[in-house]
Image 1: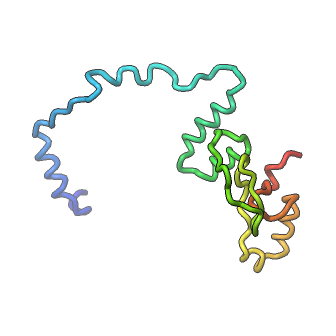
Image 2: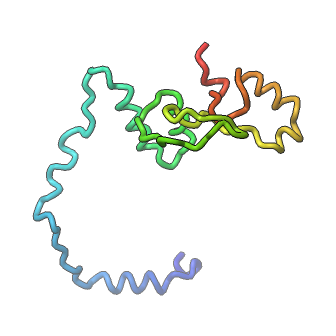
Image 3: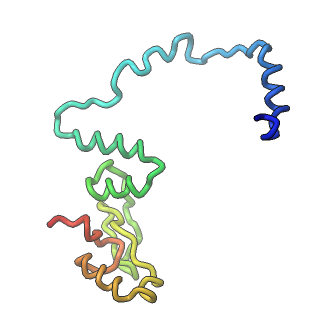
Length: 144
């Protein structure tokens, strides 16, 4: 109940104020400005060879709160096309050089894993088929 939740005063104020006339609102775009929304599809689903790109772009938009899913799709498909850094400053230092066109492919294993789980980390790095660096593809994303 509102009493138990401690919000009876707010509820009473809301109900008592509900008889007041609402403030007038004028749409700056004019009357019925929203009439065209929802009447035409926003994505042209033509069979022109760009179907996967269009699907992944829609999925990218839908996954705005699920970054790892969007990143996995980008790594897998290369879509959506992004403006990559001209120079990503990865001069082949400790975590390797990252191709600016492909972007970072994975996160490296943290030092704590090397310290506490050495055998399994070494086995995992072997599966990578390359060094434990940001530019190395994850083992499950490689083509067989």
